[in-house]
Image (tube, rainbow, N blue to C red; front, side, top):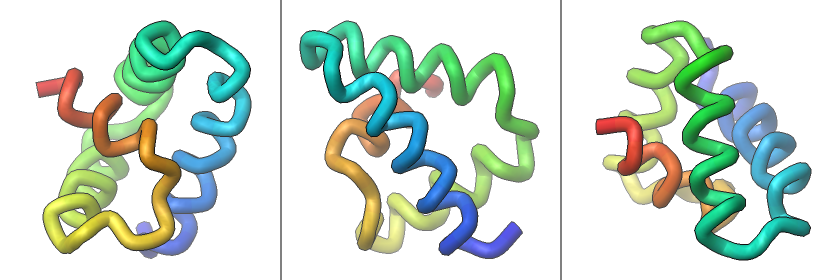
Amino acid sequence: MKPDRLIRMANQIAAYFSAYPHDEAVAGISEHLKLFWEPRMLVGIRDHIAQGGEGLNDLVPEAVRRLS
């Protein structure tokens, strides 16, 4: 899957959870990714984060780190 699509989807999830307190938002994003994203999608977003994570909401990299 193309990084721009993963970025858009991850940012939509982050936008939903952005109304929550920081820790709850990160936990919610992480849980959503764990439950609904395929392994190849997680690999793609991890790769993008490893390359700097350009375009991602700041909550997303933190949430992805919780998945490890």
